[in-house]
Length: 159
Image (cartoon, rainbow, N blue to C red):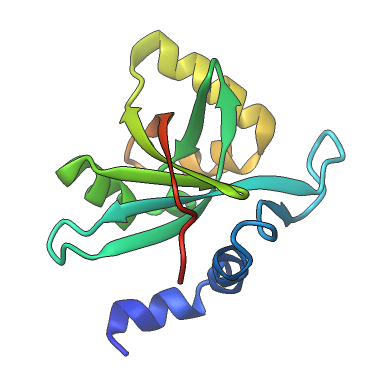
């Protein structure tokens, strides 16, 4: 197992991702977590598939998402680390993207909101989870938000 593979396998969401993939999305869309300000205990999760910028291999990453104005929003927060997550670097390097939400998967377009729009979208995401503000405070980098527009239906992701 390569070093990156070992790290991915030990990640807390590794079992969640495998259940999401094995079940075709019947499991994993809602991830149980700590109670949030509004009493919610479940976070909606999608699977984001990008193509490795150097390997050319497909990578699937589970991410919490919000839905705003007909687009899905994901944060490249990486837990507040000072480097961008691999999925974000892969996405910006080659632009290819597919998304699975529960039992439906799609090709997708994406964009990186800026300026006033970005501030409004961060306010929305902060209302979904208090962790985003903590992550932004923990790092010197600007954490990007990615707005995803679903396009054509495709088969659900597999392991």
